[in-house]
Amino acid sequence: MDKPINFTLIGRSGSGKGTQAKLLMKEFGDFCYISTGDLFRDLLKADTDTGARVKKIVREGGFPLDDLAATLWMHSFAYNLKEDQGFILDGAPRRVSEAQALDRFLEFLERKENTFNLLIDISREEAIGRLTKRRICKECGRLIPWVGEFKKLKVCDKCGGELITRRDDSVEAINNRLDYYDNTVVEVVEYYKQQNRLIKINGEQPIDDVFKEILEKIK
Ligand SMILES: [Zn+2]
Image (cartoon, rainbow, N blue to C red; front, side, top):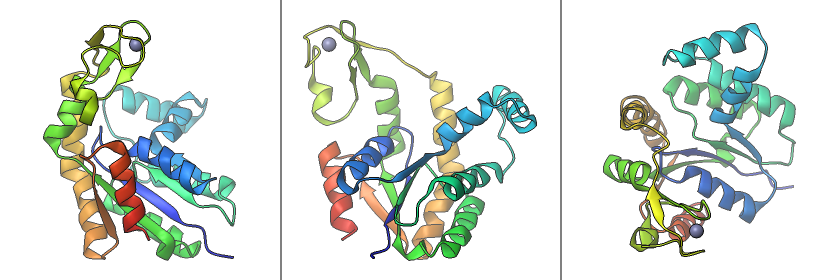
């Protein structure tokens, strides 16, 4: 039996990591999909000591305990990942300490060689454009991303309705997320690059071309 392939997906907010994760699942089938964001959202809902503490910290705009994210993935792998199943870790690791912890775990699972670390690369300017300029149809609610051909749309391509910009996040929150990437996540990119384990993908192409480049580079 071939060993299952696995992916980690890193990239700035707005790079389309989640979209590529969905395409990978369509192409290769049943992955164990893990998103740190989802795990934290579940934790905040949990009526536990840890859940309550993390909730307070997040509400005050702080960062929870360093080891927590990696602990949550490992817990999730331990209870969900089947022997013949690959995983997708969406938006992680975000710190070198997490990348190292993940590597140790992947060695234990004998999956390190079969794990592709994908960087979906878009510039900070592109990210800001995508996060602040995306539009929504006033009629049907369709979300029009600020990428490629979609930028040219004057009205909704599904129903012809008026398009309006609706920001989910303040400019400050967006800048904070992008600062975190530039200050911290970039070190993870360097960590994988130095070990020749980084696959850099141009994320500023149309969605299908981004996916084609991924398939090409993991052959
Ligand atoms: Zn519409």
